[in-house]
Image (cartoon, rainbow, N blue to C red; front, side, top):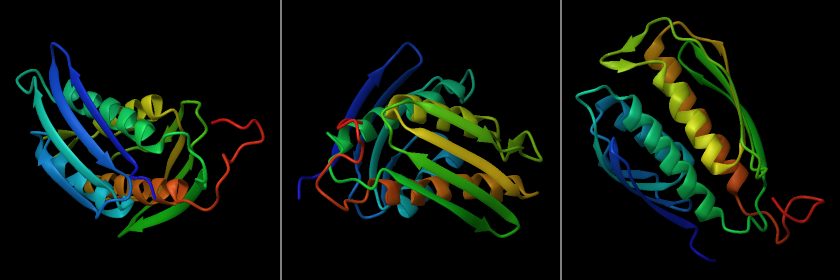
Length: 194
């Protein structure tokens, strides 16, 4: 089987990111975003998505974490699209409802070649430690746009912001893992292209 890997170097006036993704990895995240809570979320994504993620980041942390989180999402989406190649044989669709203590999160994905992001997740607090909870949405919107996938996320229950964020990243990892699994040889579209 061909290795499904993507590599992105993204350098702007705000961030400098090197990111490598292996879709068929060992569930390990190496390196750091420079943001403790974001590292925790990326570790969950890699673990539950069965990916290997290597990351090197220099961000404009003195401003805030927004640019860094968004650019990691953009970079990861680009690497994801690269790793999928022509998408032959992938399942394409997957969805699940994931519990994380009192939190309950629905995630559905279509690796469609068309970016779409539909998000209905609210947080009880503006901060999770030092992390702005609104950056969860920023990250996933950036990812969906550059990965060119349709991604739905909806909170069904949850009062603890940390648990809700964990549920988002775990559910996304598992949904992406299922949608990228190889189950055939053809492109899963009547159009012949995704």
